[in-house]
Length: 236
Image 1 (cartoon, one colour):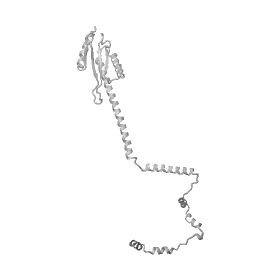
Image 2: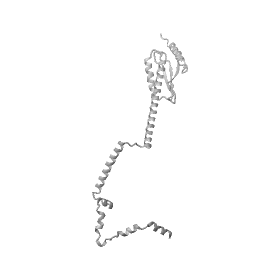
Image 3: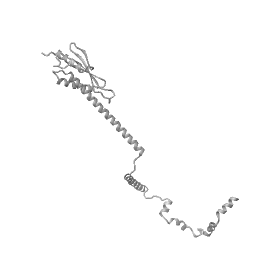
Image 4: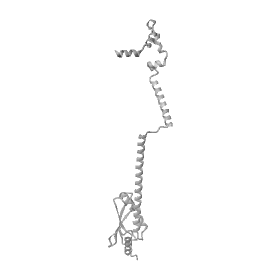
């Protein structure tokens, strides 16, 4: 006949030696009630430190042939969804270990669960840092583009010139269409297009209106000593 009480007492003594700082006996009558604080591995990457869960167990009359009563007391870091996932893991461990002392297996599964959570939190933090670095890099590149401008190469200049010539041709064509081909030329444009206009006015004058100019008068002016005349004017 199985002595359940003895088996339970032996397990309590073993657990107390394995977890001397985490194990606390709350009662030993009629059956042992105790709690074990389970912590994740230490990490410097998270500001809140390691995750912790307290597992509280109470033996039943025929434990380990039946499951112990247990309670999961999480810290503030665990959300309700995390708690439900942990309970599913513990139920699976209980089912697999019926008939054997199972508290150590339940504590180990809980610690592994917390370590996985720490790993996921690390990955999330690393991904967030990478996103921040990417945003920072893009912002710096945009700033450098504004400060430095876009360098001009032969290829980019030729591409720009081709586009510019095309736009100018389209603009010229559109202007001619809008004006219906009846654009009035300015005097300068008329002169540039008809080289005979510089003599046309002279041809319109009558012989009586024309003035004969004696070119010898201008030659005599050229012979004058203008510097001497200016000096006499200053002396007076």
